[in-house]
Each structure stands twice: as C-alpha cells, then as structure tokens.
Length: 109
Image (cartoon, rainbow, N blue to C red):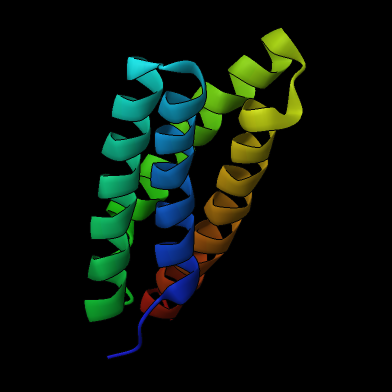
C-alpha cells in the first residue's frame, strides 16, 4: 500500500484553513466548510492509498472546492485564502485528472 502523502497534505491544508479562518474571524462557515472538505479529501486520500484507481471522491471534491474558491477569488481578488485554495485545487484536479486519463487509456488498449 502506497500512502498518497500529497493528497493527505492537501486535505490537512484545507482543514487547517477552516480552523484558521474560525480562529481569526470567528467564521463558523469557514470552519464547517474547511472541516467538511478536509474530511472528504482525507477520506479520498485514504481511498487512493488503498487503491490508486479509486480517485473519484478526491477528484470531484477538489473540482468542487476549486470552482467555489475560484469564483470567490474572481469576485474578491484576494489571494488569501480564495486564490491559494483555488490554485491548490486546480493543481490537484490536474494531478488526479491526468491519473484518470492514464487509467482510461490503459483500459482501452
């Protein structure tokens, strides 16, 4: 079993961002969203560690989070936290999406 440390780090960053947002601004929505998305991403990282082909949860959660934070970044223009999370999510979508394309192409050959 190969542990996906990158995905676990991404999940921890998202969860820590929610906790930091709550500590700094007493934002309950930031805390709940950070813990919800962080938990989903953490479970997705666990699934990826057990079976590298099981990436649907991680890919879809990263895409949803990236879309939400990308829209927030476009509307606010603030790098922290919206721009940073949008960029991290985009990087994860590219990473996981390329892995999915490789899986599809190997199944079709």
